[in-house]
Amino acid sequence: MARTAWTARRRRVFLETLRTSANVSASARASGASRRDLYRYRQNDPAFREDWDHALEEALDDLEGELRRRAVEGVEKPIYYGGKPCGAVRSYSDNLGMFLLKSRRPHVFASNGAIRNSDADEGGPDDARERLEQMLERLEALSDSSNENDDDTSSA
Image (cartoon, rainbow, N blue to C red; front, side, top):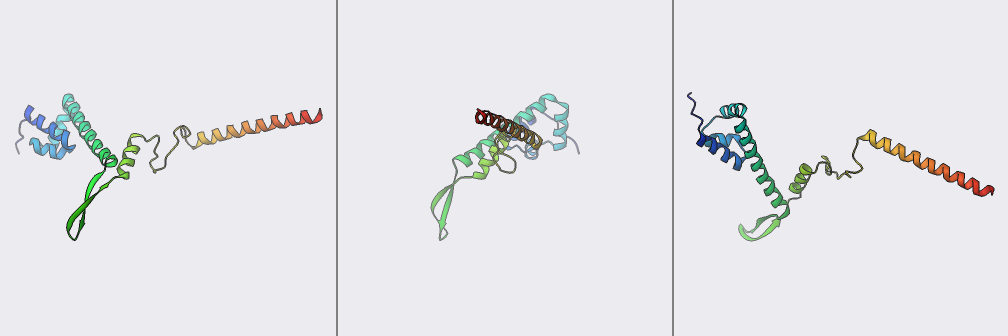
């Protein structure tokens, strides 16, 4: 099977399609190139690799914007009665909102869905245990000094 020449026009079509679809296969079909050839071009041409990465980032930014819109502004869904439209309801997606928060703020929103206090959760379990032991030592020292002061005042 003969390969088709990689031209500036085909490159532009690939990158424009990638920018709007974030889909390498669809972009390859639109440009008339094979995925294998495209990945070879990407590997051997730093400028093409950079353009590819930028196109994907733009496509993902657009997708993220749409997900945010659906989470915040909602989507109008028709209501049917007797097979006929009779109204609409605006539906919001908490799941999309949480997905965006988890991806953008993993230090705040744990992967298990729990909200973490980023100030208190700086280290692992060993750090937390060490901080707890230090606090207990300080409390014990305060308690001891308080007891000494009580003894001093009782003997006076």
